Length: 351
Picture 1 (cartoon, rainbow, N blue to C red):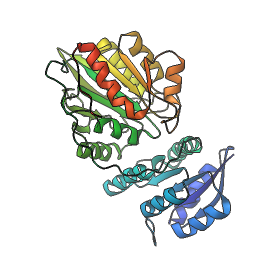
Picture 2 (picture 1 turned 90 degrees about the horizontal axis):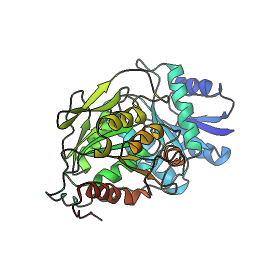
Picture 3 (picture 1 turned 45 degrees about the vertical axis):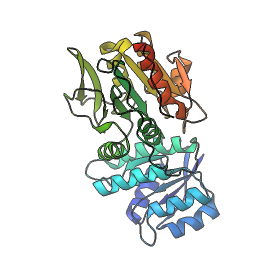
Picture 4 (picture 1 turned 30 degrees about the horizontal axis):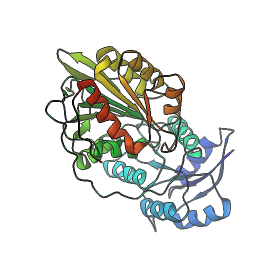
């Protein structure tokens, strides 16, 4: 039984979320709180396993409360936020402060049952997540460029992640040089948040990062993030690779799906691809990585110790789809080394 405390200043939202969660036998709402001060007392009294948290609340905002909570009493937190540009930026800040997952509130875009399903999946992932205190790292110096002799134009990097992936992706991209081969990223995230995520990455990384648009060319130094609510595929376009943003049913309950991206690359890029599967609950991406592995791509998985949830990488490893298992801090070196081996050119790696 997963014990949940719901924290939101809206009585209506507290009631809706509590009623939706009560439909699932493995989840028990042990209490609700209208603001962080009440939440603090109820955490001490009720000892919940997971906290759902709004970011806009009276007396103390959710971000300030989360920072204090992760410093003094680390607890798995799922952020439930309205879909506005300001709130999506706040939600991403919450992830950097240590929140496990972010989902949208019920509204015009998402129905109550849809939010309930998303919330249940997020709470189940949070219940098994490794919660650590997260400190904002100083911006590192930009990594040195890959040498001119290393062919990057005909190569593609693909990254897939879910729970805990926003921080993992940021750490990897911040350590990669500006002329890294064209990169396609799928992070399980609802519509309204992926644009802010891409903008954040663009501010702190040497590469240019933005949300993918249909028809974008994957050129060296450009990283494309799959937009929430759409699948991202990569197709060959002459000597280059083109992004295709497509609607369609969820795959493995996700849209965007890592499997959709990886499978498209297996068919279009094969040995020209390097693929990385990161922290996340479930198995999305494992079968696609197996196809990439069979097609001659270099495949890398995040290890258990550094994964917030060791689900997606574990499945990929178990089915024999992974060439190399690395801790998060060594994955950038692994990526550069993989491209180096494909080009047979020595490559300096940023520490």
